[in-house]
Amino acid sequence: MGRETEAAMLVLIGVLLVVLGFALRLNPLVVVTVAGIVTGLLGGLSPLKILDAFGNGFAGSRSVTLFIIVLPVIGLIERFGLQEQARRLIAKLGVLTTGRLLTLYQLIRQVTAALGLNSIGGPAQAVRPLIYPMAEGAAARRYGSVPPTMAEKIKGYAASADTVGVFFGEDIFVAIGSILLITGFVDSTYGLKLDALHVALWAIPTAICAFVIHGARLLWLDRQLDRMARELAPKQADAEVPQP
Image 1 (cartoon, rainbow, N blue to C red):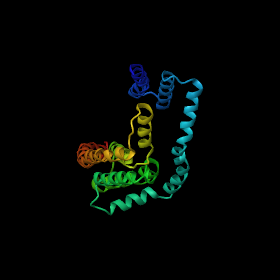
Image 2: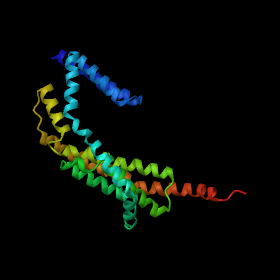
Image 3: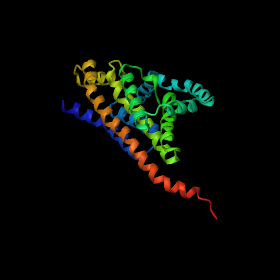
């Protein structure tokens, strides 16, 4: 039993490599590939079996590349004014500030992900063409103009609303790949029977905490934008003064 424990701990070196690689800001694809090879070798796999595992993993997750098919459609609808229409729509809704809009989107994203509907949102198909322009439009209605610094901040928070929502919402759905991966790994490695439904139920408190914490940060974004607008106002005024 001691040798098996040591072998299992040795395999965790791959996780350490991933953490170090990301901390050093190396290429994520190279970091994950090297960590996978090292983990396979430490686990006693032959090079052919490691290559086979990479092939099976790619074939099993090929659906993640389907967004490439959607990109031309998004480009066409943006070309014909989708972002402008989104800005006009949000300009008519005075109740929705930037923070409130993003909090509402995070809630919708989290609930739909909990129901297994992950593909209805995302950075490519929702955040860039719709959510960010609407959030920027809400800021433009409030401040008159959106400087580049403010726009970049809104972009980051719009992406975070989508990421946090789907990340903590999808684990509530029993048939999601992460739940099946956890239960399969625990069953095969440690011989423990882990029910997928129990894992999904225990993900609910985590999802609620994630919504409360990040939702508060999104609502606090309005105050950050207010402060940023006050700081940028004198600079814009100086820039508009004609030089003699």
